[in-house]
Length: 220
Image (tube, rainbow, N blue to C red; front, side):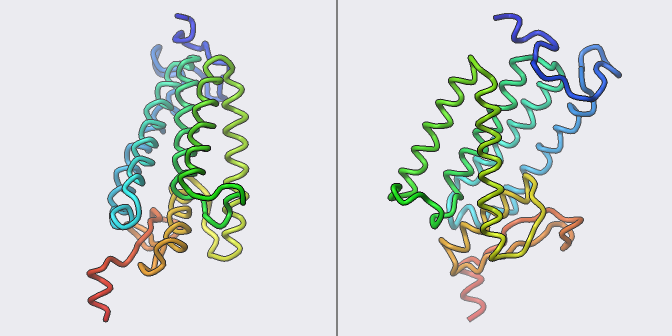
């Protein structure tokens, strides 16, 4: 069991040279880059606050989990340990699973699923089973992540045929799903994708802006 915590016990070794700057940090640049998750997540929670208050406060959970992804990613790249690899991959899986539960478009639900609650239960149990199996077979999680990623790209491509194209990334992807959710579920708020702090798709962070009840009254 102790071996799973050992340095370089992971089955994967990335292309960055190991231990260039420290005997304690295997992949320096990959470890440092994980800090970005702790910067973008609080900003996105602030920018999405009106949407979360209007639609579902569980949106905050997505960004808390994304910060955990950053923490586990830093630990993984610092140690290249089997345990770090497991934490990193499983945290990503649960971010995707929670995102599915919150934002998967209702119109794309399989016909045999009658409600979002039933869909969320299926997603939760599937993610839980994948988590348990991954402890014994890490390749299970790799297949699960790839399957989910391909399906997300497929669903987004279906939606993008009806809306403006935005580069797919963590921040962009979550903003897109939040937008699609608001577009179908709370259209009266006039959801709109905006960018902060610069109104530019190249320089700013995308976020979902909605009109609150106060703003709607003022426009009348």
